[in-house]
Image 1: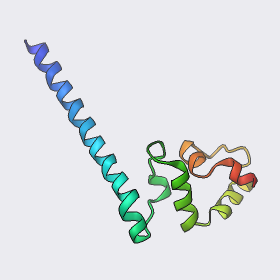
Image 2: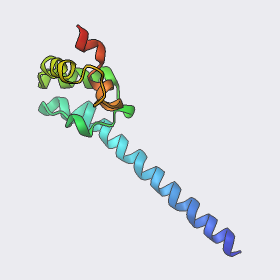
Image 3: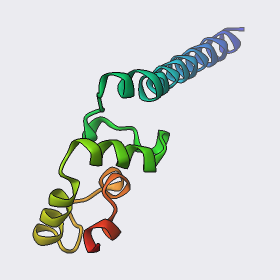
Image 4: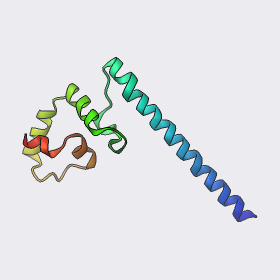
Length: 100
């Protein structure tokens, strides 16, 4: 009985955490689709959950607000082997754009 109770409580915690995460990402989607365009806002590039968004739309928002070409030029000059990058940087600022 005690083992069943522990398993039940653990499952309940996991279920609540998933529900919270789902609501949070629904909220983020609302911000991205409705509020950010309305107010000319964008998320901070380092706070973007790259795996949860449309990469092309995120790149377009960033390019409209920040000097992405200058950033990519600096990356190409200072980090030609892409050692300092990560998946988020490579998704939002693709290496192909650095060669263009």
